[in-house]
Image (cartoon, rainbow, N blue to C red; front, side):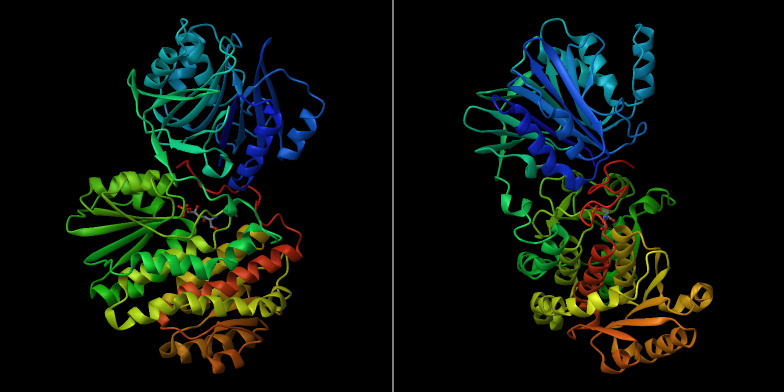
Length: 573
Ligand code: M6R
């Protein structure tokens, strides 16, 4: 989703801003822009589309600015047009503003601007912040920032330039993350550690605001100066592709280590009692794939649902139950809202997140971390496997503990099927539907495989329970229709063999993901995986599906790491 960068004290200000924005590209965006605090006033340069287009617009621009802010926008309020693109200028061109998040009272604020004779030029909620800052400015920038923050409801991370103080940046945040870095002779900020290069990195606390100058940053809360909270520097190795063609492939290959770190960190943690597991997208699939293990471990019925559905479900009493909120980013708005709602309904809320000190870990009473490391590709891979590994580590009964510890090795062996995944990818056609089916623990894996293929190849891919195929969807199976059958549970072998035969009898091409010889033989093509306990299989069985989607996307020439319309973390409900 949207990304923010800012620098003060840089001679190479345009390069610093654009390089920062490029590091945020992975989050997904549809337009980008920068604002410069020049001696003659504030100047903005904005463009729709990729950062490379912004670069072209900036070529040849000479500036005396040493301070500026930049933004990548993922459209929510208003289309991806240049006028909606950030930074936004205030009516008197005194302030330039970039904003992440959603201002919930934007209608009232728009009316307030109009009452004061200002007609916003864009459709965005963000532009209103710039006007409010100028309304509230009477010579003291920090006072204006504080007054403005008090007028906003919703979530925001904001960076602002003020023409009167051309070497300062003002930052404010509520809920949406914002980090501040101090280097030698310059100070910077970013919404994501990936875009910060600094000796010391601080997190701007929730509800705090700050003034950045070339020599450092001052942090404030409710009119008082406060001590900043230092955080460990971001591991820049995660931001470089390091010889891989795409971040997605790099992250697929990092899965054994990610799972090993996660299992190591969580062994000894136990999930007990009646569980409701909640997530969105792949995190929901991780929840679904862990459901049979949760029921085996607790001996009680468990449930998995999407955060969006939980939010609109009946407000039943959750007392005595644990809600497990799963999220790679920890910033997914639906999941964060579901955590708050779960607490209101009486559940004990536990976050399983990959990003420490994220919004989700803040709102949940307890949290555990997966240890995938930063994930850059929009399509999650190591994020999913480390969630599956985390749930396995916390749920597996003692006799399976050793198997859990061996999961990273099984994941490593599953990577060997890359060659077969390329062959399987050739069975997929850009405009023809593909099916992903499985039962029990394999259902969540199958749904994840379908999502992976859909999101990076745009092939219409359906994930469903293998038992459901005959209840309607089989109507779509014709000569050559690819059906990916995930089979890991020996007890379900007869059912899987029957399903394979049923599909092939209608001309469908079965691609089996399985450790089982017989099921492999019953398929047109097999992606062989090592045998692990079926309840622990999702972290392993998903690997060939990721490779299948990846190879298909490369063959189709898709933008693998930045699929159309998608954002890395969906911070709007
Ligand atoms: O950061 P989260 O795990 O909360 O994200 C949830 C989904 O938005 C995410 O898994 C999404 O479905 C991915 N694009 C899947 O690859």
